[in-house]
Length: 179
Ligand SMILES: Cc1cc2nc3c(=O)[nH]c(=O)nc-3n(C[C@H](O)[C@H](O)[C@H](O)COP(=O)(O)OP(=O)(O)OC[C@H]3O[C@@H](n4cnc5c(N)ncnc54)[C@H](O)[C@@H]3O)c2cc1C
Image 1: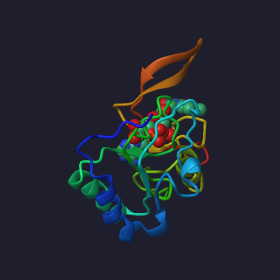
Image 2 (image 1 turned 180 degrees about the vertical axis):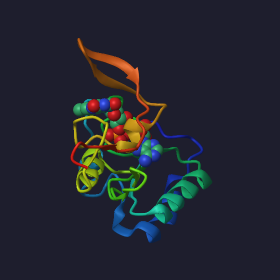
Image 3 (image 1 turned 30 degrees about the horizontal axis):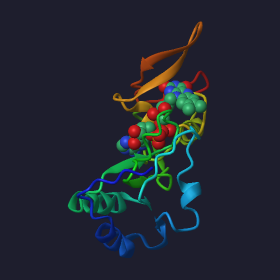
């Protein structure tokens, strides 16, 4: 069951978002809404009231300001691999960043500046072009922002199997032997 914040004015919020996002604003009645709420943990049943597919910082800003103005809770979707499904807020507005996966590599510094929805595979693939290795996980579709957030408790493979740890990976590349 969806729980909606009593003071949230979802109707006015979606009216404000419609001219900004057009068909990138998805409501539960729209085709594609169900697939847009599909995440890695299929057991999660959180039901947002709207999804906006952001393409740039202006989109993100517009969505955040609108959510705040109309008291609609929001969540951010990166790679969608959080086990608890925190990318999808029950009764909330989802900022879907899967259209923001750009990666800019600074070969001098050995660092990357990445879009909020970039995956492990995007970052490691971009680095490989310059002979730079990415010290991170192996599942290419995990989101880089979710993975590197210090507030997120994640799995990590230990010598004897899976264990819990807090992940805070730097977004720096390691030079490879060939570089
Ligand atoms: C199959 C699998 C393999 C994994 N392998 C590893 C591994 O090798 N090493 C490791 O450390 N971890 C690993 N993890 C754990 C993974 O790193 C975390 O679950 C991580 O939080 C997933 O991030 P995401 O962006 O894919 O998920 P999401 O569910 O999209 O996001 C996770 C959280 O971060 C927030 N968030 C995401 N992007 C942003 C953003 N741009 N701005 C603000 N908030 C954001 C979301 O709102 C949510 O609360 C793995 C998980 C799975 C399911």
